[in-house]
Image (tube, rainbow, N blue to C red):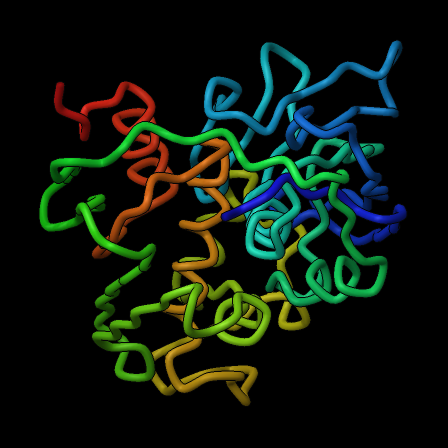
Amino acid sequence: MEIQQTLLTAFEMSGVGLHSGIVTKVRVLPASIGEGRYFVRVDLPEGPIVPARLEAVSQTLLSTQLGEGLISVCTVEHLLAALAGMGVNDARIEIDGPEVPLLDGSASVWVEAIARVGLVSPSPPLPLSPSLPLLQPVWIDRGDAFVAAIPATETRFTYGIDFDLPAIGNQWYSWSPSRESFADAIAPARTFGLAHQIDDLRAKGLIKGGSLDNALVCDANGWINPPLRFANEPVRHKILDLVGDLSLLGTLPVAHFLAYKASHNLHIQLARLLRKGLGARD
């Protein structure tokens, strides 16, 4: 039985945002049981709250952004994946800027901080709210890219990517939380980029904070900043992103989540289908 958990004490991190290039400070605090995960923009008047919920997704271009109107928090997926992967259901996330710090490009720093402060659950333990049962496959596709949820007896995430660059090529990885910990198998995998796309992305006002210190970069000759933490680090990072995006559902159905060449946008579209209960039958 999965139970409600929050942090035992608060922790704090600061760093540069991938796309904005702005340095922000994040303080992650315990929250009351049942409050869920949510952001608080402490740099703005009255500290507006941005819930880490599917309904708050406002943009999915190369990251996941939450908010409404001018109030937003972007690149939330790595921190949310860390919280979900470590079993933190309720957390107040205070941030003094528009973008969550990228740190080293993975979720490991967040995971280590969560492990350091520890978790607490109510006494007696409270079970998580059940999600809608998944009784039939649900999927969304675009060209040859897709993401799907398939009924299963245990939760599993399988991802495939395919790039023309020889150093990446075609990679697949399948991760079961019951058999490998998120902290060991998924959290260390860093975000990655392609060298030939950097100038164009920066011309569009993106990846202003990206560097060889917080992202793996690949060109036709191989990795510019090795070594990799895993031989298949890129595809493991895509699972990290998927976990972070699907965490916006709150509680996941037990399913096999299967993706190929997908994106934040497709991840979120699948989550919306699941929220509508399209995988359930009467």
